Image 1 (spheres, helix red, strand yellow):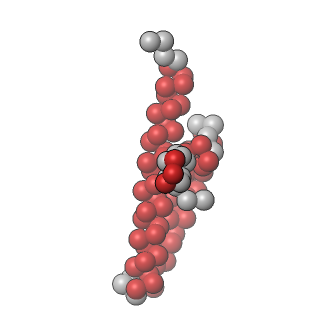
Image 2 (cartoon, rainbow, N blue to C red):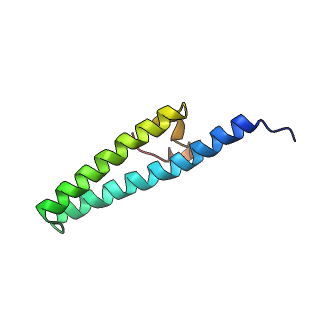
Length: 86
């Protein structure tokens, strides 16, 4: 088996960023549910919003650093659709 180290490294970065993006989206959905239910204070909502916004911006930076787009992170799950929203 002949493996290209650069391709393997890029694929690994892509996989890691895909998992991070999936977790970011899940945390965002959970935060929205909690806000809608009234489980968090106004101050907590502000902190959650700021944190999620900063994480979203950081994902853009990481993708750019590694020559990826958010679309590159999305996995096609066949009949189930795609893994990530957007």
